[in-house]
Length: 388
Image (tube, rainbow, N blue to C red; front, side, top):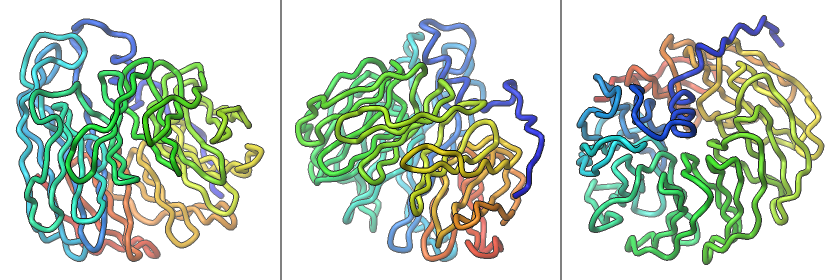
């Protein structure tokens, strides 16, 4: 394992974190961006990649975000051929954090979810879309009239329902086939997190520093757990425990049924990404440029793999290896047997979006709007294209 000096400075943390802090501490308009920057990760299913291209912000400072429209595209996983694209009109009013009334973009920042013949995505314009995976035809939109507050996280489909958190401080469940609302639950503050559903439980973090467990059936609160920082990462549920990173610089393991603390692990910076698990080990990427290998049961540090650049992107697990992308564009494979890293590729472009993989191929979407298909074993570039 290669050990480097950690020179990740606080001043170089990404715009996503700066914007999170804006959401936590700023009530009015003080000349900072009021919309997130980044982009959704791709979701690959049955040979098709569903992706919401990054919206390049031109201006967007202060109280007037640029009036731009987002879209969802479907591409061939084999060669990047575009099957269809669906433009999503920006129709919502409001600047997002108490700013003046203005048009908001329909940009999608959370990864889409696929179930059956539909792909689902939530927009910054406060709407959820259900789109036919084959034709690109819009099946339904929620709400049908008006809008919610911005939806930053991704959606999850389970139990024939679509679950998501919203900036209005609520968690929603919709009927997956019709878009009819099944329930809503008000948590303590806005959330940018993507929920996780396991069995009949839904788990989600919040800006109020709490982590919530709700009934996925009726939305009733089962328990909550308070940390010392906002929670924006997506939880991992593994072997009856739930794992979550917080902006208090700790990574937590909680009993999934009761919410009781099993252990917590400290780091030098913040945790944003979703963790992955393999054979009793949890792998958690951190803004300090390290991926921590922790014992799932006791939180013992088994390894700290120093990649030399902050980890924002969700990793993926492929054939016993954790594939991780760094902010500066390097793609590593961590062998879970030895916890040693190998550099697979260096695209030399910032990576914030989650990775996805299928059939031995890794798909990487960069901040320069380029999508790369890489061989998971060798890192060889199979194809790439710019998506606009």
